[in-house]
Length: 252
Image (tube, rainbow, N blue to C red; front, side, top):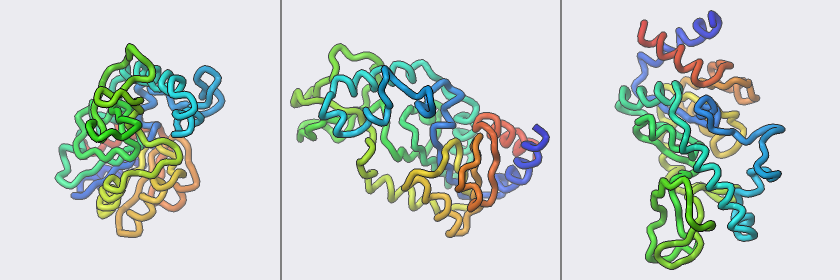
């Protein structure tokens, strides 16, 4: 804890002096809330790798199986609550007039914590869209149900299959979302929190922010290769590091 305090103290000073702050978050931010990361040796669901169920091909092949996975995930996350990391980031979003949160997470916990100016790179688990893109349905609509009477659910407008409003493997990110991400790279301080920063395009954001003059920070329990290219790397869980950082900033 003494080492962590020594690392966050100068960062707290930078936070106090900054006017433009951008944060990029990944699955590690939600881990303390009980949201499964589905990584590693235990990352299986009914003998399936989640990655094998999160593609357009998997949905076309067996939409009922894909939706079983998403319905289970929705019901699991519905019981989760924001943790200390979400709370600290939410506080920053209200403190800084020029703040952007870019998240790779689809669980909605940042929004539940009251975070403002959220850019969702991969969409939301709590939104749906018509897989046939029928003209009568909006591009995406919110649906907070954890349980569905019928799987896969049907579009209320054309009776076609409904898919989750998330970006699947192999799909391109929304161009407007990417524009918002790029605009947020013009900042004083860029923090990457709870993500390994090895998957593109998210992995390119911190280096580009640094190129534009931002002080770049990574907070993650592990130290991936990207750490060497940033200004500061803090090896700690998001909720622990952000709590220490928030306390230090309030004391200064």
